[in-house]
Length: 431
Image 1 (cartoon, one colour):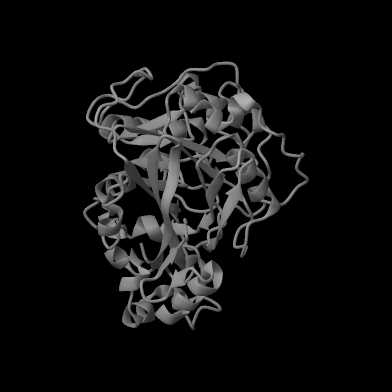
Image 2 (image 1 turned 120 degrees about the horizontal axis):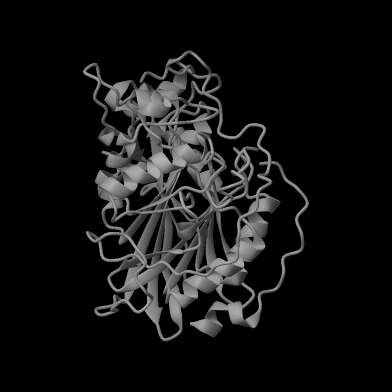
């Protein structure tokens, strides 16, 4: 997304102050022989704006029951004193990624993509994945960049890996139009009603709700937004199909989250400059606004590379943790910088003054490009020089020096003094 002139960020009203309201890689070629490009070349801001005239609160029921509009008075017994939330970056279904799980008998399975990080995801009370590309299924025809569509079996693998939430507002959300959104959401709804999918919508009523995930008696609002849909306009009859970044939308969502009794609000804005070393003015504007309006944490996506962590000073005096980018999670991109990824980890402690950030870190991961089911994501701590020597990224231009040590050095340079080269984790001082 290109930088543009942004309006001055408005100061929040007192009513909105949180404390006051308690297949094969092909050496750079896809299966069809086309170069695997980046995610959003030539992006333009979406012109459509979302409707904002309703105020319906959504609260997820207990896992195993049908998702629906439970009221904010759901029983709150046995509330936990702490809660952990983990979040990973973009899942981009380039052709070599979805090809890795296609078998000669016509079946498809993608468990291998997450097999080596499943144990790292498991401890989270709430695990969030950025499902960037639409999974509309076989009837739409599988395709990679620039208008993606992937197999719905990827959803099965994400759930099996332990993800509880899929955030979906991003620049590729409209790649298959409203019909693609409808097809993917129908699959989630039929097979995994216990999983929260937010940021894309197949009806206006769901758009007008905020997603509240309840875990151990605590309520976490998950807000997913995007700054662009790559110039693909939202349908005239469905301007609610994707949650776009706007000041009024954010203000309304924060109010709805508080009305629903959210203990924590975590915002995921999809914006920024691809492959940039640090946050740009667009990221800073929206993250600052989200913090000022009440977000307890901000986790950005879209740059495809990890970017430094920063504390944001909200207007009400809170320090809000901000991960400027966790990078990709799974992709077929061809830059070695996009191989190094992050899993953001937050621990919230609850007291009389509300939620406080007790612990904050980012575990570094590696996207291991290989043929077939050897394609996978590894924790950097477990990645070996032998594996690195087999990573097909080494055959791409400018990537022949890719190694485990290169990944360690890159993470250290990007994340700064909080990075531990032995544990391969960046740890924030929350004191």
